[in-house]
Structures are given as C-alpha cells and as structure tokens.
Image (cartoon, rainbow, N blue to C red; front, side, top):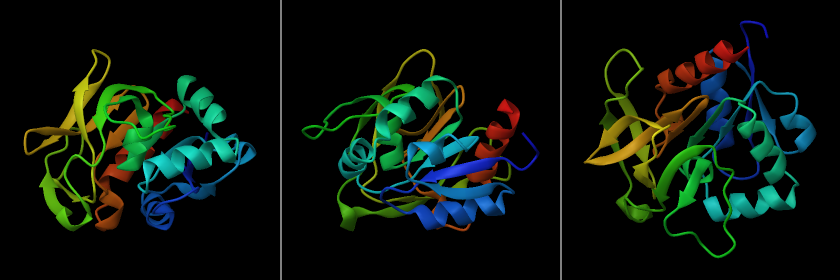
Length: 197
C-alpha cells in the first residue's frame, strides 16, 4: 500500500458524502462501495450513520453482508459511526426483527439510546488517541455501548456512557464526527489503515 490508502464508504444508505469528504481531507483516496467487487478493492472501510435495520437489510440484498463479515474477520480496518457502530457490534441489546450485524467488536450496543431525532445534540468528547483536545460529536438518535468484552478498548465516554470503542483494526463511534468539519477521527482511522499496509 502507498501512503495514500484507498478507503471505501459503504454506500447503501446514510451520510456517505460527508465521510468521503472527511476521508479525502485526511489524505485518503475515498470511494463509495456498494458491491462485493468494490469492497475487494479497498484497504479499509467506513460504515456510515443511517438507519441500522435498513442498512442490514440492504447489505443482504446487495450480497454485501457475508463479504463484509469476511473482510472484517480477516482484519480489514473498519470504522463505523452511529448505525455503523450498531453494525460492528457482536450483539445488539434490542435488535429489530431480522436485524443482523457484521460484528467485529466485542460489545453490546443499545439502539437509539440517547433518544429520538428531536433529542439530538452536539457535544465535545474527550477521545483517547486523538490529539488537540476534545472532538466535536453530533449525536443523532445515537446508540451507546452497554458493555465491552476483554478485547475491546473504550476510547470515549460521554454522560457516563461509552460512545467510542476500538478493537484491533476496528473503530466505532456513536456520534458523527463527519458532520462537524473536525476530521481528526478520520485522520486517526486513515493512520490505522496505513499501519496495516
């Protein structure tokens, strides 16, 4: 891999464009990924926010769920925000009927834990491994992590709840850093992808 990794954004549903911009600003080549052959061409992947049940069903429909599970299990760097965090959880506390996950992080996640759409908020979040002070996090119908297993590392807490977790090459946040113009979390993820190459 060169110093400019190719990082995909799962483009089945959700805020794809904002992640593409944030990754480009972190010196990655960013491209949308919808099909298994596109997934095979990237060095890392962002799973964006959106609606986790819909994304899970679309991943099955597009033939993406098993290839995603295989690449994540094989160590491909992956970063999930909000719904992406839910998809990376090994277990969902309150899954919708038929909802599946990609897995990859030993954590139990509660969907919509911070409340409904009209209870969305923005907050400064202390984030281990990100220099320069707290990151701006936008919480929109955001999940939180109920608990983590021994292999997962808590990297951010807000209001007494776990809001960011890292396990090996996998990173997940319950908030949306891509909506703030603060691209340090994407820079951290880009470095994670480079270090694997």
